[in-house]
Length: 358
Image (tube, rainbow, N blue to C red; front, top):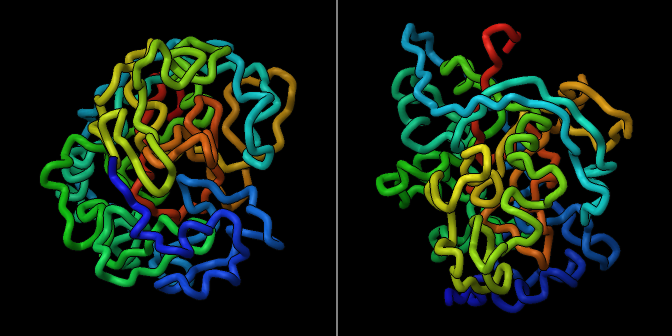
């Protein structure tokens, strides 16, 4: 059992019930003011992602295109998925603002989806070939779960989720801050990835991000009426099938599923489509802009709204826990600004058949 209570202190133990003005005794500076509203828990707050706080807010980081190279990396292992009709979303999602419902009939055309999320090793090859610098690198900061960063340093904490720290120097090759490394994490999913970083990788690798419908169809693995890729319950048949928080979030973890932070991309059994870790471990970017307004009528190949400044992430992460968000289901989704970077956010790639436009 890893006890994290000393990290939070007295104020942290009360973080879910106090108004933000009561955090004056909490060490570190606070960013934002959205965890509580008029003394009540903000329904937008969740354990996994900072959907209203940006580490690069106010910074002019610009956009960077990868250096041109004749070498194209296409080594990602892809699974061809024949597509078809399925029941997308859910009518019983725990957070109505997330827009899981209504459950609706959706058709997905044939496509291919990566067996795993993009790994640290794969992203390293991209950076080595193109000299690309991620949003977090250019900003000089990203968000790290408090148990993983240097506790001797007074990193800022966002009010709506005191378990996060805004850590200078945190990025894809220093996922827990400048004193960490990726030496033993090459088979882990790359994290601290903003949407433009994922798109840059896709451009280099001749891939693309999956649409939300493609992602969910793949995650379900043919189980269209089940909340999890393996069945009806989180610990089906008494087994751990994914990497989510085990214990008293965010104060202690017993690591019953084998991990506290990220797990290797092939940890746990794949789903029936042979896709790994579609639930838990890390959140994954999709191509779609976010909306919580969906037509109840059947639709073919939806790709999200044409306008909007927020995008859909899917899958949940190692920080998801039933006491806060239960966002580790196939229908779960989050709305994120495109410059979001955290230690539990990455992506996987997709590809259209040659007869389709990528």
